[in-house]
Image 1 (cartoon, rainbow over the protein chains, first blue to last red):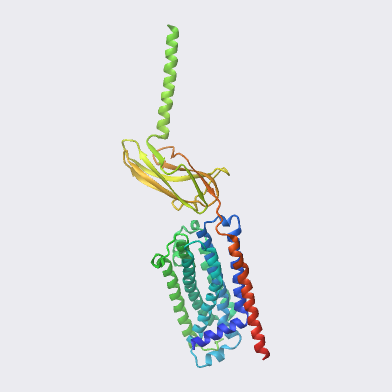
Image 2 (image 1 turned 60 degrees about the vertical axis):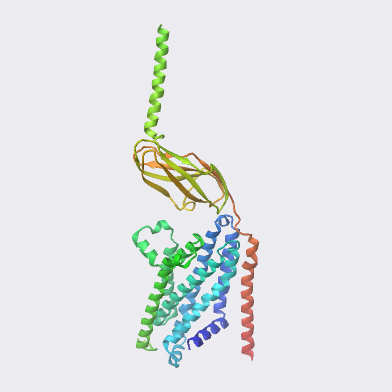
Length: 256
Length: 183
Protein backbone atom coordinates (compact mmCIF):
# COMPACT_ATOMS: atom_id res chain seq x y z
CA UNK A 1 0.00 0.00 0.00
CA UNK A 2 2.95 2.32 0.68
CA UNK A 3 4.07 1.68 -2.90
CA UNK A 4 0.60 2.58 -4.17
CA UNK A 5 0.55 5.91 -2.28
CA UNK A 6 4.13 6.64 -3.38
CA UNK A 7 3.41 5.99 -7.08
CA UNK A 8 0.14 7.94 -6.90
CA UNK A 9 1.99 10.95 -5.47
CA UNK A 10 4.76 10.76 -8.08
CA UNK A 11 2.24 10.58 -10.92
CA UNK A 12 0.09 13.37 -9.47
CA UNK A 13 3.03 15.70 -8.93
CA UNK A 14 4.44 15.13 -12.40
CA UNK A 15 1.09 15.68 -14.11
CA UNK A 16 0.33 18.84 -12.15
CA UNK A 17 3.60 20.46 -13.31
CA UNK A 18 4.46 21.36 -9.73
CA UNK A 19 7.50 19.15 -9.36
CA UNK A 20 8.69 19.56 -12.92
CA UNK A 21 8.69 23.34 -12.49
CA UNK A 22 10.78 22.84 -9.35
CA UNK A 23 13.19 20.71 -11.35
CA UNK A 24 13.41 23.38 -14.04
CA UNK A 25 14.11 26.04 -11.38
CA UNK A 26 16.80 23.80 -9.85
CA UNK A 27 18.32 23.21 -13.28
CA UNK A 28 18.43 26.97 -14.04
CA UNK A 29 20.08 27.61 -10.66
CA UNK A 30 22.69 24.90 -11.26
CA UNK A 31 23.31 26.21 -14.80
CA UNK A 32 23.81 29.76 -13.58
CA UNK A 33 26.03 28.70 -10.67
CA UNK A 34 28.26 26.32 -12.61
CA UNK A 35 28.68 28.73 -15.50
CA UNK A 36 29.52 31.55 -13.09
CA UNK A 37 31.96 29.38 -11.17
CA UNK A 38 33.84 28.46 -14.32
CA UNK A 39 33.86 31.77 -16.13
CA UNK A 40 33.90 34.48 -13.44
CA UNK A 41 37.42 35.93 -13.14
CA UNK A 42 37.60 35.83 -9.36
CA UNK A 43 35.72 32.56 -8.85
CA UNK A 44 37.64 30.72 -11.55
CA UNK A 45 40.82 31.37 -9.57
CA UNK A 46 39.45 29.19 -6.81
CA UNK A 47 41.04 25.82 -6.46
CA UNK A 48 38.88 23.27 -8.28
CA UNK A 49 38.18 21.41 -5.06
CA UNK A 50 36.84 24.62 -3.49
CA UNK A 51 34.70 25.12 -6.57
CA UNK A 52 33.26 21.62 -6.25
CA UNK A 53 32.58 22.15 -2.56
CA UNK A 54 30.69 25.36 -3.32
CA UNK A 55 28.63 23.62 -6.00
CA UNK A 56 27.90 20.67 -3.70
CA UNK A 57 26.58 23.05 -1.03
CA UNK A 58 24.33 24.70 -3.61
CA UNK A 59 23.00 21.33 -4.85
CA UNK A 60 22.19 20.11 -1.33
CA UNK A 61 20.82 23.53 -0.33
CA UNK A 62 18.52 23.81 -3.37
CA UNK A 63 17.43 20.18 -2.92
CA UNK A 64 16.56 20.72 0.74
CA UNK A 65 14.67 23.93 -0.01
CA UNK A 66 12.57 22.33 -2.77
CA UNK A 67 11.88 19.27 -0.67
CA UNK A 68 10.92 21.37 2.37
CA UNK A 69 8.44 23.46 0.39
CA UNK A 70 6.94 20.46 -1.39
CA UNK A 71 6.80 18.22 1.68
CA UNK A 72 4.99 20.96 3.60
CA UNK A 73 2.01 20.78 1.28
CA UNK A 74 2.00 17.08 0.39
CA UNK A 75 0.40 15.79 3.59
CA UNK A 76 -1.06 19.02 5.02
CA UNK A 77 -2.70 19.67 1.64
CA UNK A 78 -4.90 16.59 2.13
CA UNK A 79 -6.49 18.26 5.17
CA UNK A 80 -6.99 21.57 3.34
CA UNK A 81 -8.48 19.96 0.24
CA UNK A 82 -10.80 17.86 2.47
CA UNK A 83 -9.44 14.68 0.95
CA UNK A 84 -7.88 13.54 4.24
CA UNK A 85 -11.13 12.07 5.52
CA UNK A 86 -11.65 9.75 2.55
CA UNK A 87 -7.94 8.94 2.48
CA UNK A 88 -7.68 7.96 6.12
CA UNK A 89 -11.05 6.14 6.10
CA UNK A 90 -9.82 3.90 3.28
CA UNK A 91 -8.47 0.50 4.37
CA UNK A 92 -4.96 1.83 4.85
CA UNK A 93 -3.23 2.86 8.02
CA UNK A 94 -1.96 6.41 8.69
CA UNK A 95 1.55 4.90 8.76
CA UNK A 96 1.18 3.73 5.16
CA UNK A 97 -0.13 7.12 4.02
CA UNK A 98 2.68 9.00 5.76
CA UNK A 99 5.45 6.67 4.55
CA UNK A 100 4.08 6.77 1.01
CA UNK A 101 4.28 10.57 1.11
CA UNK A 102 7.79 10.48 2.63
CA UNK A 103 9.02 8.16 -0.12
CA UNK A 104 7.56 10.54 -2.70
CA UNK A 105 9.51 13.44 -1.12
CA UNK A 106 12.71 11.36 -1.19
CA UNK A 107 11.96 10.55 -4.85
CA UNK A 108 11.64 14.26 -5.59
CA UNK A 109 15.13 14.75 -4.09
CA UNK A 110 16.41 11.92 -6.29
CA UNK A 111 15.01 13.77 -9.32
CA UNK A 112 16.82 16.94 -8.17
CA UNK A 113 19.99 14.89 -7.77
CA UNK A 114 19.56 13.42 -11.26
CA UNK A 115 19.23 16.95 -12.66
CA UNK A 116 22.40 17.99 -10.79
CA UNK A 117 24.43 14.96 -11.96
CA UNK A 118 25.48 16.41 -15.38
CA UNK A 119 26.69 19.58 -13.63
CA UNK A 120 28.71 17.48 -11.19
CA UNK A 121 30.24 15.53 -14.08
CA UNK A 122 31.20 18.68 -15.98
CA UNK A 123 32.64 20.61 -13.05
CA UNK A 124 34.60 17.68 -11.66
CA UNK A 125 35.98 16.63 -15.07
CA UNK A 126 39.74 16.04 -15.02
CA UNK A 127 39.74 15.38 -11.27
CA UNK A 128 39.59 12.11 -9.36
CA UNK A 129 36.65 13.43 -7.35
CA UNK A 130 33.70 12.69 -9.65
CA UNK A 131 32.75 9.39 -8.01
CA UNK A 132 33.20 10.72 -4.48
CA UNK A 133 31.26 13.89 -5.30
CA UNK A 134 28.34 11.94 -6.77
CA UNK A 135 28.20 9.33 -4.02
CA UNK A 136 28.60 11.70 -1.05
CA UNK A 137 26.12 14.25 -2.45
CA UNK A 138 23.64 11.39 -2.91
CA UNK A 139 24.28 9.81 0.51
CA UNK A 140 24.31 13.03 2.54
CA UNK A 141 21.44 14.61 0.61
CA UNK A 142 19.26 11.51 0.92
CA UNK A 143 19.85 11.23 4.66
CA UNK A 144 19.05 14.93 5.19
CA UNK A 145 15.94 14.78 2.98
CA UNK A 146 14.76 11.63 4.75
CA UNK A 147 15.14 13.30 8.15
CA UNK A 148 13.51 16.54 7.02
CA UNK A 149 10.59 14.79 5.32
CA UNK A 150 9.88 12.79 8.50
CA UNK A 151 10.02 15.96 10.60
CA UNK A 152 7.81 17.92 8.18
CA UNK A 153 5.29 15.05 8.03
CA UNK A 154 5.12 15.10 11.83
CA UNK A 155 4.53 18.87 11.78
CA UNK A 156 1.89 18.44 9.04
CA UNK A 157 -0.07 15.99 11.18
CA UNK A 158 0.16 18.37 14.09
CA UNK A 159 -0.89 21.58 12.29
CA UNK A 160 -2.94 20.13 9.40
CA UNK A 161 -2.31 23.38 7.53
CA UNK A 162 0.12 23.92 4.65
CA UNK A 163 0.80 27.53 5.61
CA UNK A 164 1.71 26.74 9.22
CA UNK A 165 3.68 23.65 8.24
CA UNK A 166 5.61 25.54 5.57
CA UNK A 167 6.49 28.48 7.83
CA UNK A 168 7.60 26.15 10.65
CA UNK A 169 9.60 23.94 8.29
CA UNK A 170 11.32 26.94 6.69
CA UNK A 171 12.20 28.36 10.12
CA UNK A 172 13.74 25.01 11.10
CA UNK A 173 15.65 24.83 7.81
CA UNK A 174 16.94 28.39 8.15
CA UNK A 175 17.82 27.91 11.83
CA UNK A 176 19.98 24.95 10.86
CA UNK A 177 21.37 26.30 7.57
CA UNK A 178 22.32 29.86 8.53
CA UNK A 179 24.83 28.98 11.32
CA UNK A 180 26.36 26.41 8.96
CA UNK A 181 27.22 29.24 6.57
CA UNK A 182 29.02 31.29 9.23
CA UNK A 183 32.79 31.51 8.97
CA UNK A 184 34.88 29.50 11.41
CA UNK A 185 35.86 32.64 13.34
CA UNK A 186 32.22 33.17 14.33
CA UNK A 187 32.02 29.66 15.80
CA UNK A 188 34.67 29.93 18.45
CA UNK A 189 32.50 29.97 21.57
CA UNK A 190 31.38 26.76 23.24
CA UNK A 191 27.65 27.17 22.42
CA UNK A 192 28.41 27.63 18.70
CA UNK A 193 30.81 24.68 18.79
CA UNK A 194 28.21 22.43 20.43
CA UNK A 195 25.51 23.53 17.98
CA UNK A 196 27.93 22.93 15.13
CA UNK A 197 28.51 19.35 16.27
CA UNK A 198 24.82 18.45 16.41
CA UNK A 199 23.65 20.50 13.42
CA UNK A 200 22.90 18.07 10.55
CA UNK A 201 23.35 20.71 7.82
CA UNK A 202 26.71 21.72 9.23
CA UNK A 203 27.64 18.02 9.28
CA UNK A 204 26.76 17.77 5.56
CA UNK A 205 28.89 20.78 4.60
CA UNK A 206 31.77 19.63 6.81
CA UNK A 207 31.66 16.13 5.31
CA UNK A 208 31.67 17.53 1.75
CA UNK A 209 34.63 19.72 2.72
CA UNK A 210 36.35 16.66 4.16
CA UNK A 211 35.78 14.68 0.94
CA UNK A 212 36.23 17.30 -1.77
CA UNK A 213 38.85 19.59 -0.25
CA UNK A 214 40.79 17.31 2.10
CA UNK A 215 40.35 14.13 -0.02
CA UNK A 216 39.15 12.01 2.93
CA UNK A 217 36.91 9.87 0.78
CA UNK A 218 36.52 6.69 2.78
CA UNK A 219 33.33 6.22 4.82
CA UNK A 220 35.05 5.72 8.22
CA UNK A 221 36.83 9.07 7.71
CA UNK A 222 33.42 10.73 7.51
CA UNK A 223 31.67 8.91 10.34
CA UNK A 224 31.99 11.93 12.65
CA UNK A 225 29.78 13.83 10.19
CA UNK A 226 27.41 11.00 9.35
CA UNK A 227 26.58 10.34 13.01
CA UNK A 228 24.84 13.74 13.57
CA UNK A 229 22.83 13.10 10.40
CA UNK A 230 21.82 9.62 11.56
CA UNK A 231 20.92 11.01 15.00
CA UNK A 232 18.84 13.71 13.29
CA UNK A 233 17.00 11.01 11.29
CA UNK A 234 16.42 8.98 14.46
CA UNK A 235 15.04 12.02 16.31
CA UNK A 236 12.81 12.91 13.32
CA UNK A 237 11.57 9.30 13.21
CA UNK A 238 10.71 9.39 16.93
CA UNK A 239 8.88 12.72 16.51
CA UNK A 240 6.98 11.29 13.54
CA UNK A 241 5.94 8.19 15.46
CA UNK A 242 4.68 10.32 18.37
CA UNK A 243 2.85 12.59 15.92
CA UNK A 244 1.15 9.66 14.15
CA UNK A 245 0.09 8.18 17.50
CA UNK A 246 -1.27 11.59 18.53
CA UNK A 247 -3.09 11.85 15.19
CA UNK A 248 -4.68 8.42 15.62
CA UNK A 249 -5.81 9.32 19.14
CA UNK A 250 -7.31 12.66 18.13
CA UNK A 251 -8.92 11.35 14.96
CA UNK A 252 -9.25 12.81 11.47
CA UNK A 253 -11.62 15.57 12.53
CA UNK A 254 -9.54 17.78 14.79
CA UNK A 255 -11.18 18.90 18.04
CA UNK A 256 -11.73 22.64 18.01
CA UNK B 1 103.20 64.39 19.50
CA UNK B 2 99.93 66.17 19.98
CA UNK B 3 98.90 65.02 16.51
CA UNK B 4 99.58 61.36 17.41
CA UNK B 5 97.61 61.73 20.67
CA UNK B 6 94.76 63.26 18.72
CA UNK B 7 94.75 60.41 16.14
CA UNK B 8 94.84 57.78 18.91
CA UNK B 9 91.97 59.55 20.71
CA UNK B 10 89.90 59.63 17.49
CA UNK B 11 90.63 55.93 16.82
CA UNK B 12 89.65 55.02 20.38
CA UNK B 13 86.51 57.13 20.13
CA UNK B 14 85.36 55.55 16.84
CA UNK B 15 86.39 52.08 18.00
CA UNK B 16 84.42 52.52 21.19
CA UNK B 17 81.44 53.83 19.26
CA UNK B 18 81.38 50.89 16.81
CA UNK B 19 81.93 48.37 19.63
CA UNK B 20 79.10 49.89 21.68
CA UNK B 21 76.80 49.96 18.64
CA UNK B 22 77.52 46.31 17.80
CA UNK B 23 77.06 45.24 21.41
CA UNK B 24 73.79 47.18 21.68
CA UNK B 25 72.42 45.72 18.47
CA UNK B 26 73.34 42.20 19.58
CA UNK B 27 71.71 42.67 22.95
CA UNK B 28 68.43 44.11 21.63
CA UNK B 29 67.73 41.89 18.65
CA UNK B 30 69.38 38.73 19.86
CA UNK B 31 69.85 38.01 16.17
CA UNK B 32 72.66 35.54 16.70
CA UNK B 33 70.93 33.68 19.54
CA UNK B 34 68.33 32.13 17.23
CA UNK B 35 68.46 31.77 13.51
CA UNK B 36 65.79 30.77 10.99
CA UNK B 37 66.98 29.30 7.73
CA UNK B 38 64.78 28.50 4.71
CA UNK B 39 65.85 25.17 3.20
CA UNK B 40 63.33 25.06 0.36
CA UNK B 41 63.84 26.99 -2.88
CA UNK B 42 64.07 30.76 -2.50
CA UNK B 43 62.19 31.38 -5.76
CA UNK B 44 59.04 29.39 -6.45
CA UNK B 45 56.57 29.35 -9.32
CA UNK B 46 53.18 27.72 -9.51
CA UNK B 47 49.60 27.86 -10.70
CA UNK B 48 46.65 28.90 -8.54
CA UNK B 49 45.41 25.79 -6.79
CA UNK B 50 48.88 24.22 -6.41
CA UNK B 51 50.30 23.24 -3.02
CA UNK B 52 53.91 23.80 -2.05
CA UNK B 53 55.81 23.14 1.15
CA UNK B 54 58.05 25.70 2.78
CA UNK B 55 60.79 23.89 4.69
CA UNK B 56 63.06 25.63 7.14
CA UNK B 57 64.86 25.17 10.38
CA UNK B 58 65.34 27.12 13.57
CA UNK B 59 68.66 26.92 15.37
CA UNK B 60 69.58 27.96 18.89
CA UNK B 61 73.19 29.17 18.75
CA UNK B 62 73.46 29.90 22.47
CA UNK B 63 74.72 27.68 25.27
CA UNK B 64 71.38 27.69 27.08
CA UNK B 65 67.86 26.64 26.11
CA UNK B 66 65.37 29.21 24.85
CA UNK B 67 61.68 28.73 25.58
CA UNK B 68 58.32 30.07 24.47
CA UNK B 69 58.91 30.64 20.75
CA UNK B 70 56.04 31.17 18.31
CA UNK B 71 56.86 30.92 14.64
CA UNK B 72 54.51 32.09 11.93
CA UNK B 73 54.41 33.11 8.28
CA UNK B 74 54.34 36.65 7.02
CA UNK B 75 53.37 37.13 3.39
CA UNK B 76 53.24 40.27 1.25
CA UNK B 77 51.57 40.76 -2.11
CA UNK B 78 54.31 42.65 -3.91
CA UNK B 79 52.05 43.79 -6.77
CA UNK B 80 49.47 45.42 -4.53
CA UNK B 81 52.00 46.25 -1.77
CA UNK B 82 49.77 44.71 0.86
CA UNK B 83 50.16 41.98 3.47
CA UNK B 84 48.16 38.83 2.69
CA UNK B 85 45.60 37.28 5.02
CA UNK B 86 46.72 33.65 5.20
CA UNK B 87 43.21 32.34 5.98
CA UNK B 88 43.00 30.34 2.74
CA UNK B 89 46.71 29.97 2.05
CA UNK B 90 47.79 27.87 4.97
CA UNK B 91 45.91 25.70 7.44
CA UNK B 92 48.67 26.11 10.03
CA UNK B 93 48.53 29.58 11.46
CA UNK B 94 51.70 29.15 13.54
CA UNK B 95 54.05 26.61 15.01
CA UNK B 96 54.70 26.89 18.74
CA UNK B 97 58.02 25.70 20.11
CA UNK B 98 57.89 25.19 23.86
CA UNK B 99 61.66 25.04 24.27
CA UNK B 100 64.69 24.66 22.08
CA UNK B 101 67.83 23.25 23.70
CA UNK B 102 71.29 24.78 23.51
CA UNK B 103 72.73 24.47 20.00
CA UNK B 104 69.72 22.47 18.90
CA UNK B 105 68.10 22.72 15.46
CA UNK B 106 64.42 22.04 14.91
CA UNK B 107 62.64 21.62 11.56
CA UNK B 108 59.87 23.96 10.40
CA UNK B 109 57.38 23.00 7.73
CA UNK B 110 54.42 24.84 6.23
CA UNK B 111 52.09 23.67 3.53
CA UNK B 112 51.05 26.61 1.34
CA UNK B 113 48.12 26.59 -1.00
CA UNK B 114 48.41 29.01 -3.94
CA UNK B 115 45.04 30.70 -3.92
CA UNK B 116 45.33 33.78 -6.09
CA UNK B 117 47.54 34.78 -8.98
CA UNK B 118 50.22 37.37 -8.25
CA UNK B 119 53.76 37.79 -6.95
CA UNK B 120 54.46 37.38 -3.28
CA UNK B 121 57.24 37.33 -0.73
CA UNK B 122 57.13 35.17 2.33
CA UNK B 123 59.16 35.11 5.52
CA UNK B 124 59.10 32.96 8.63
CA UNK B 125 59.01 35.01 11.79
CA UNK B 126 59.88 33.80 15.28
CA UNK B 127 58.48 35.63 18.24
CA UNK B 128 60.46 34.87 21.40
CA UNK B 129 58.74 35.70 24.68
CA UNK B 130 61.95 36.90 26.36
CA UNK B 131 63.15 39.15 23.54
CA UNK B 132 62.08 42.56 22.38
CA UNK B 133 62.38 41.99 18.65
CA UNK B 134 61.22 39.05 16.54
CA UNK B 135 63.58 37.11 14.30
CA UNK B 136 62.90 36.79 10.59
CA UNK B 137 64.16 34.41 7.97
CA UNK B 138 65.30 35.53 4.56
CA UNK B 139 62.55 36.05 1.98
CA UNK B 140 61.12 33.39 -0.31
CA UNK B 141 59.69 34.87 -3.48
CA UNK B 142 57.01 33.20 -5.51
CA UNK B 143 54.95 33.87 -8.57
CA UNK B 144 51.49 32.36 -8.89
CA UNK B 145 49.98 32.18 -12.34
CA UNK B 146 46.20 32.17 -12.84
CA UNK B 147 44.47 28.89 -13.45
CA UNK B 148 41.49 28.37 -15.64
CA UNK B 149 39.89 25.43 -13.87
CA UNK B 150 38.04 24.03 -16.83
CA UNK B 151 37.32 24.98 -20.34
CA UNK B 152 34.09 26.99 -19.98
CA UNK B 153 32.95 25.57 -23.30
CA UNK B 154 32.45 22.23 -21.60
CA UNK B 155 29.84 23.61 -19.25
CA UNK B 156 27.80 25.45 -21.86
CA UNK B 157 26.10 22.40 -23.42
CA UNK B 158 25.03 21.26 -19.95
CA UNK B 159 24.12 24.74 -18.66
CA UNK B 160 21.89 25.36 -21.66
CA UNK B 161 20.92 21.77 -22.44
CA UNK B 162 19.52 20.68 -19.07
CA UNK B 163 16.86 23.42 -18.78
CA UNK B 164 15.93 22.81 -22.45
CA UNK B 165 15.63 19.09 -21.81
CA UNK B 166 13.38 19.69 -18.80
CA UNK B 167 11.24 22.12 -20.77
CA UNK B 168 10.83 19.49 -23.48
CA UNK B 169 9.95 16.89 -20.82
CA UNK B 170 7.33 19.22 -19.38
CA UNK B 171 5.87 19.86 -22.83
CA UNK B 172 5.61 16.11 -23.51
CA UNK B 173 3.87 15.56 -20.16
CA UNK B 174 1.46 18.39 -20.87
CA UNK B 175 0.73 16.98 -24.32
CA UNK B 176 0.07 13.50 -22.93
CA UNK B 177 -2.17 14.98 -20.27
CA UNK B 178 -4.19 16.96 -22.82
CA UNK B 179 -4.55 13.86 -25.03
CA UNK B 180 -5.81 11.85 -22.04
CA UNK B 181 -8.28 14.57 -21.03
CA UNK B 182 -9.67 14.93 -24.56
CA UNK B 183 -9.99 11.15 -24.91
